[in-house]
Amino acid sequence: MARSTHTVTNQPPPLTGYDVFGADRALVAAVERHLAPELLDGALDELSGLGRTSGSAQVQEWGVLANENPPRLRTHDRYGNRVDEVEFHPAWHRLLGKGVSAGLTAAWARPGGHVRRAAAFLVWTQVEAGNGCPLSMTHAAVPALRTDPALAAEWEPRLTSTVYDREPRPAGQKAGALFGMAMTEKQGGSDVRANTTAARPLAEAGTYELTGHKWFCSAPMSDGFLVLAQAPEGLTCFLVPRVLADGTRNTFLIQRLKDKLGNRSNASAEVELDGTWARRVGEEGRGVRTIIGMVAATRLDCVLGSAGLMRQAVAQAVHHTSYREAFGGKLVDKPLMRNVLADLALESEAATTLALRLAAAYDDGGEQERAFLRLAVPAAKYWVTKRCTPVAVEAAECLGGNGYVEESGLPRLVRESPLNSIWEGAGNVQALDVLRALQREPQALNAYLQEVGRARGADHRLDAAIKGLLTELADLEGIEARARRLAERLALVLQGSLLVRFAPPAVADAFCAARLGGDAGAAFGTLPHTLDLASVVERARPVV
Image (cartoon, rainbow, N blue to C red):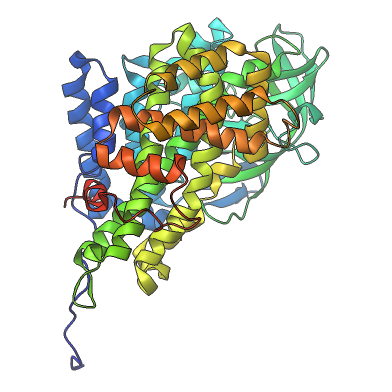
């Protein structure tokens, strides 16, 4: 029998067995703020249930297993028949099933659905981010399908179902279905107008045969896909079912799965379309306009996903330092560590508050809110997703060497953290989209300014930032080269205005001082020491 050489002390307990939703004060406050009173009790119960599930040791273990056992491509069966199937570890199916049953594809089907789903998505991302991809694609496909009422009537009930049916059968025989997306090609990337996939009309109205390739197909195991291809009248959107109505497999040839930096549990593929049957979605030649609703919804999910990753990173850092002792006391009580933690907490709360405000705009659906989203979504997608990686890396450092070890969970967060900035249009694409909104849709800027103007007069640093932003907008010289700077300022001013209106004074004061007033350095942990940093950190601490 091996003898013990020492007694283990001064090691924090695992962050498990807690309500991930209820422990996030900023998220709970946002849900309470944006949901109608008659919906609130039911939503809070539902979200707390998901929060407890997310915080359980068993479900967290599923997340570990899904990433340690990534998907495998099986192109042929034992008899040599082409099947093009992606095999997943059972933990993946358990996670995806939980996500579907929690309503993460059902936002369009119930009152307050976008706020409720946004909060749930932010919580569920903290367990395992990879299964968020098919959940996001399925949710986001609905606005694109609504451009064709017949298609929407057929497919929307399946996509908004809370039943996870993984079997490859005709969609008409399934109680629930998932959607993927295949837009980009090798030669074009984000420039989808450079796509060369050809769509040849068939005899049946609205049906086509597609031939070409897709460089990046999200969720290739799905029941259907939205695909862009060149029809006779130009770039057009199509629905490609995985299995045809007669039970035969559609031609959807998976060439290989991508070997990605992070997001290891989720399959992303390169596919070939060779005489693939498809139905047109929207008008010929209007593919980008048809798909734009899906793009906007997935971009909001990138904001939510990054907010979730940041929240989990901050929760782990505050939890660790609340238990770990060094140099005569708890790390969380050391002034320098407290400064770092408070700085990280500011970033997390600002991201959460902004993300839920965008979701509430979707629920409202009015013209003013639609105009607001047109500018706020690309600005938020640009900035929030870019902040995720430095937050995750700094949070890992708060754990010291433990944060560099896989068992801590922080390395998985670090690997995942750049993804939302790259997918659904990288930084330059978002910044240029901000410019397009400013130049072509003046109502978008008006709606944005009305939103931030609601906090005018409450903080002199915010007022100065709004004034500086207006000066930036008035100067069109070299505007494209300044697009990133402009997107950043739009996002920061919007975050500041929301925090000034809704966050505790200590949080709003620290954010305005550091992010708008310039009273901080380039690294985290450089906040003015005169701020109430202890209150900021305590607000971020997950109560187990």
